[in-house]
Image 1: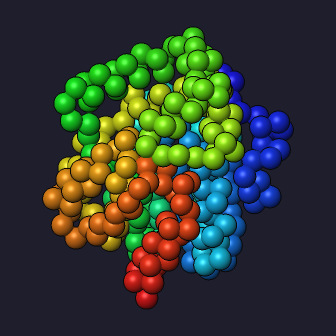
Image 2: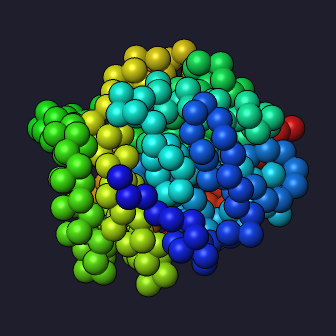
Length: 291
């Protein structure tokens, strides 16, 4: 199925001068690496790619060696089979990549579903950072009707190539992307919209996002949270319309040691709206976690 093509879509990709392609775990990964210092692993959320770190990564690179891959099936990374798009499967794939790169993350930052993957990596012993930052993390199962509707619907659409193509066709125009972004509670500049449009007009990228949603079982995280030994720092945007800020308080109930920081006036894509604010939080965590 059609995926974004580096030869055309990647020509002006944000921070493309730091891009590389690496083979690991049977996949061809798009990875960006920049900066010097302690290794900081960045994992984006469902439906995004490395472009989401376009302004944040250079700020962090002043203090860290930043490692940011496109998740399996997303952006310019090839897709595994459908059944490997589960939470354990995605974590195992990222773990294989980390081993292939020969890096040992000392800090990790995950946005939305990326935070759940990082927690699974820590619980599985694939990484051992001294701090894990969850930015608007999707860490707990959906409650009520969404939990009974969204995942089964995503499974039906993910298994249909035609449905992925229809979604990409409908969402891949400027108005469709503007609606998708607005529904997150965030406001982005036109260039931010353009990179998302470039992704969602690709049926392969859309199918990967749907496959993640169809396979996702966050009960695994909810049950295992009390076992997490890595210090967890929750960063929550008060205007997030994708993952309710209330969910972070549920996480704190399961893991009282977690620290909570709120970002007023921002939505789910807070790191794209005000990257300097998020960079300052990361540096603050590093000042405590890496001593």
